[in-house]
Structures are given as C-alpha cells and as structure tokens.
Image (cartoon, rainbow, N blue to C red; front, side):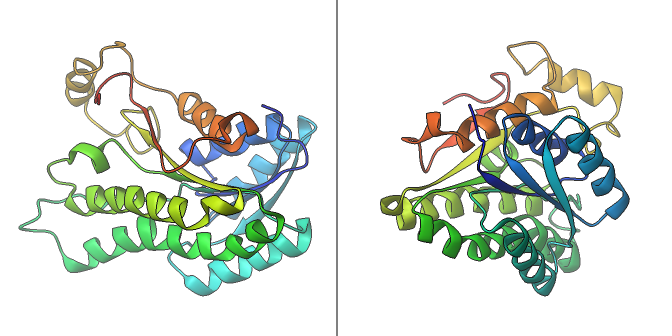
Length: 247
C-alpha cells in the first residue's frame, strides 16, 4: 500500500485514532497534514513522523469553526499543492439521556462530528476533482450503526456520517474519487480509558474476537481505503469491531 506522492489531511490528529492514522499514512509514504486544536501535541506528532523519515506539517484548527477550517485547508494546499486523501476523524462526546440532554450538547456534538466533515470535504473537493483522484474517509462508529443509550447526539452524528459518505460516493464516483467510512467498535483510546473496568469487561463479552481493538486496527483500515488497492470500493462502511456487530 504505497502512498508515495500522495498528500493526506487528518483531522483530530493530536491523539487516539487520528494520531494513529497520521502515523500509518506517513509510514506508507504519504505527506501528512495533521490538524487539531492542541499545537504542542501536533508538533510532537510531526517530530515523530519526520524522525522516521516521513513528511508532515501541523495545522492548528478547531473543526467547530468554519473560518479556521477554510484557512487551514487553504494553507495546507498552498504548502503541498494538493490534498489527495481526507480523513474526517475529529469527534467529541457529550453523553446524557435524551430527556435530559441540553440543546448546547446536542449542537456541539453534531457540529464537531458531522458538520465539520461536510465542511472539510468541501475544501478538498476542487483539488480532487481537478486531478480526478481522491479518497474521502470518514471515521464513524459502531454506535452510528446500532445506537447507544445516553449517546443520542453521538449516535445521530455518526449515523449522519454514514449517510454523508454514501451521498458523496454517488456524487463524485465518476471522477475517480471514492468516499468510504470506517466504523470502529470498542477501541482502546483516551475516550474509552475513563470507563469503569466493569463496563469494559461487559463490552469484552460482546466481542467474538475476545479483545478490545487498538488504534492500529483502525488506522490499518484507513490506510487500506486510502490506497490504490481499494480503488473499486466506494460508499462502503468498513466495520472494525471484532465481530461486535455483524451484517
């Protein structure tokens, strides 16, 4: 899966799945623009990629701010000339039962997890259409497929990402651009490490492969969808969940 000559842009790259995706794409030869709010973590990531003979640059960006999105993508395209691969990974949670959920928490999650993906995709479309090649990869979630109590906002945003993925696939498929989603299950990240041991063990019993997933499991799926090997796959949701949800 050689990505030499390709330029990737990864949102939410300062930690977790986004961090793993940036490393994995860089290892495959892609130049990587890494974006998140935390400048120090981004610079540490860039240093790790460059120390391993990769190429990367940091872009401090809050995906909840449309103007920051526009300026960051403009700067990345000015620096690298194009963007071939977009990984919409940035996401947050604001968990609460739907009857108690505050409108502000609903809006924050939908804006960060779903609206930002639409805005970021708009920014790369011209570059991809011009070269008639592109990979749009949206990081959704198993809970966008099966729902989750206490996460109506998160589940809705991730289900929306699946619909967005398929709509884009139909719009731009004839131009050599694919649009796919990766749906992680229970993955060991900063977002899940705060869960109780009892909850983790309960989740583990639902996974046929008998283990919690790693960031590397998800990043490998993203790398595959970004490659030429996946050129005939579009509008697809690739589940990376150890068998927790099938079908």
